[in-house]
Image 1 (cartoon, rainbow over the protein chains, first blue to last red):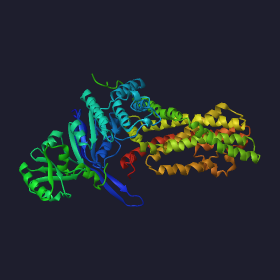
Image 2: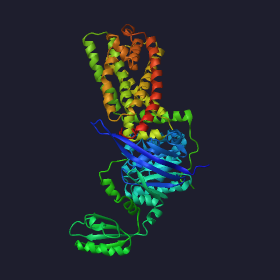
Image 3: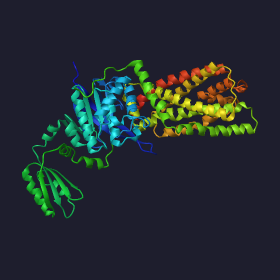
Image 4: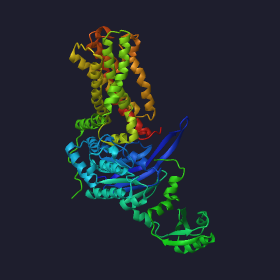
Amino acid sequence: MENHYAIETQSLGRIYKVRHAGKKETKTLTALEGVDLQIRKGELFGLLGPNGAGKTTLIKILTTLLAPSHGQATVAGFDVSKDPEEVRRRINMVSGGESSGYGLLTVRENLWMFAQFYGIASKEANARIKTLLEIVGMADRANARSSNLSTGLRQKMNIVRGFLTDPQILFLDEPTLGLDVGASRDVRNFIHRWMGDDPQRTLLLTTHYMVEADELCARVAIINKGKVLACGTPASLKQSLQKEAIFRMDLDCPRPLEETQFSGLAGVHSVKVHDNEIKTVMDLVLAEESVLAGVIAAVSSQGAQIATLQKREPTLEDVFVQLVGQRMEEVEHADAPSGD
Amino acid sequence: MPMLPPVTKRATGWRLFLMTVMGRSYPRVVGMQRETSWMFFDTFLPMLSVAAYVFVYRAIKAPEDYVGFVVVGGAMMAFWMNVLWSMSSQLYWEKETGNLALYIISPGSMMAILLGMAVGGLLATTLRAVGIIILGSLLFSVNFVVASFWQLILVFLLTMVALYGLGMMTASLYLLLSREAWHFSNLAQEPVFLVSGFYFPIKNFPSWVPIIGSIIPLTLGMDAMRQLSFASGPSLGWVSVNLEITVLVGLAVVFLVAARFLLSYMEKLAVREGRLTESRS
């Protein structure tokens, strides 16, 4: 029977032993726990989670760079632990912020070198490099030394490297990390076009940018502290919050507001207060709209004034908050052990 | 119309192996020549320590062939430094830049990657070594008396195969190391200058020193090359050239086979322990 899944994991887990400098004893760190995923052929699948959630650990296992501590993973129908060579013939990977290649070589030479490792003849490799550099707007930099490239151009070169070998399954680990808005948009457009060209191509994208996952991915898995918390289409994940009322308030406050002053109110499912330089912003997920009156009263009792009040559609960020209880930045800033 | 057609043909087997070797040797052969500063740092600077020994030998009225020994030693030192810093500890740097992960996940074998590093390093370093030989010979009027040109070439090639085989083997060991790779290379650098006799004939040592030093192929290789290149070489040689050739063949085979198996074992161990991309134990 034909396997319809490009990637499949069963109870996949990874435990690291960590030894601190100067100490003999080791501690264990669970980076991934009980991950069950099925990613169909032709799917653009997103792994969404904060730094340290386990996204990169999962990618390393799927790309044969790391052995799982328990469970099983297959890529293109091959077990990553038992048949790594078969997996490697069918994949490629690009990581955000990577500095691969050699600075003394030109962009074209670096890309040619990597094409050799995939058995692509020089003539074909050079033709593909030319086409791809034109697509990403780097044709004029083909003969520039890669050490002279800006961060954005370097990442575009990395992206080209990943697509150059025409992999069945491509892993993009935070591909737009550190890129400006324009370069990120170019990368996303390129991904869209590449996927549209061949229905058999599969792409696994990890990101901690909600908008990127929402815009690009057919399905998304939300991952935190090594566990997959939810998996579905962005629309279905957001729909799970549709029965609730989501509001955003901009407030003028004489003194800082505490979330606990509101989270205990009946019908308040989640409240997040964050300050920027100009105002205080309160994000609310309420059981129903009528709960809002109580919240407004509580805000007023604190001496705060409501500048704007907006009811909005749920986002993946709201889904994450609902699942984890914190916004993604808060999870990243918390002193949690890192699994990535 | 698709923006990029599928790849029409992919090499596999030995063709992929050769392409991988060529691909990885390219940065060394071409890239290393791009910075013209190598002519100063890799040719002129080594001449300073060569000159120091030459002046000492001339001051104590040592046999004139000692000057040639020093020039040969200075040239061969380039290969030792290349193996130590650009072969053995190279995988540590490749890990730091993210290249190692990309090598591992590619269909090209890691043995081919290491061989590419070796071939590229050998070719690039040969250029530097030739520069040192020419410069040293001109500056100090070295008188070569080659007994057998083809035997000399054979000894040089065997020494290089064994030496870079050693480099490939130790590179596999370094796969597990992090920053300590730097310290190990530092530790190995100076003692080998001594026991391999870069600037003097190893015959001057008690015999147990060159026996231990023979684990580094340059020890026997240089001794044989000196015996074949200078008039007084045979009288200053440690053991016969034929014996040294035999041992070098043995070393080459042992190091290359050990590199093959160690690399496979170390890669599996590094994947299991998660050390290919980070330093967690």
